[in-house]
Length: 267
Image (cartoon, rainbow, N blue to C red; front, top):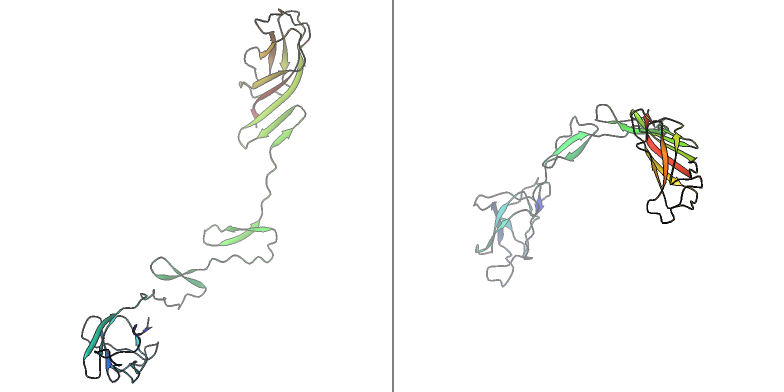
């Protein structure tokens, strides 16, 4: 890449610094040698300058000087005295060469980090006639195509007054059951009642059951629990007057309660 020679000191001055170096010259050499090297009067480096290049009456070079690469320059005044010798190096290193575009129709020029290369332009497909479709990568992974947007599957959820069933795409679903019940007023410190699930859980599994008392008990405080582990078909709700109750009361009011069971069923 060519670049223009510009002397940083402005007009070229003679050795004593008393006047310009009019009538002198600047000789250009290969970098740090005494081998003459051409300069040019145009950016395209087609017209060589004389070497050395004469200095005009205003103390400036008589022609434009364009350089190609690195040089060593020597300024001499009109008496052939050497005023200075300087090495000239381009401020910007030459860029990467642009590869020949022949045969690269429709490709784009890009950098691979060290050189410039041509690569295929991965364009989006023509959207004409593809209303409501989406763009996806093709099967070979080197382009794009449009295809209909798939319908989202309906969520696998069943909701009823007494249960919720949620599917997860596997072999099992989660089920929650809800219900209420009443245990007898036993007249003692304990009572119980069996609860049968309206829908059985998966055989051999143990659902989680929670019980909430829904009416006041004069004999309280009360403890509600299940009698052993629930089964897939149901459980037994047990209500006890808490031990240590100073009133020493018995269950004379039938306990009413609500319950919730959580477990799994086959999908």
